[in-house]
Image (tube, rainbow, N blue to C red; front, side, top):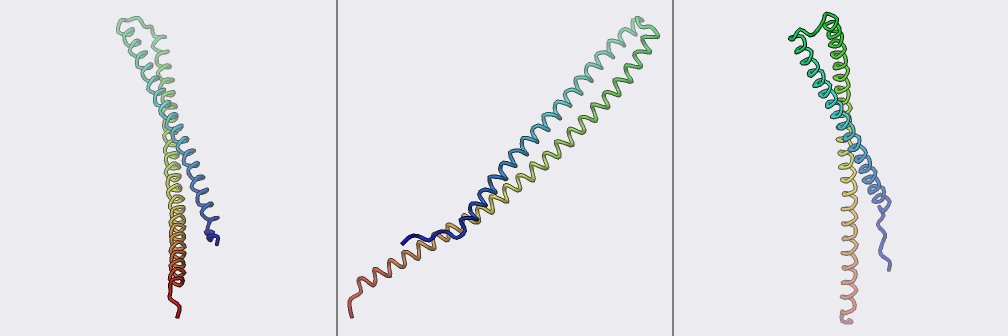
Length: 158
C-alpha cells in the first residue's frame, strides 16, 4: 500500500516560497540601508573636509591681516567669500540631514523586512511541525495495524 500523501503539501511549498521571497526583500533592504549609510558618511566627510579647508583659508587670511598685507578690497572679498562659505556649509548641512533621514527610513525598511522574515519563518515552521506530527501519526497507525495483523496471525484457532 502506498503511503498517504500529506494533504497540505501545497501550503508547505507556498510557505517556503514566502520565506525565500521575504529573505530576498530583507537582502534588498540591507543593501539599501548600507548604501544610505555610505551616502551619509560621504556627505559628512565632505562637509568636514570643506570646513577644514575654510578654517585653513581663514587662518591664512588672519595671518596676512596681522602682518598688514591685506588691502580694503581684500577684506571686502574676504567678507564675500565668508558669506559664500557659510551658505555652502548650510547647503552641505541640509544634504547631511537629508542623508540621515534616508538612512533612518532605510533602517525602518530593514526592520520591517526582518519582521516579515521572522513571520514567514514562523508560518513555515508551524506547517513543518504539523507535517511531522501528521507523519508520526501515520507511522503509529501503520505500526498499530501491523501489530494487529501479527496478533491475528498468531492467535490460536477457536
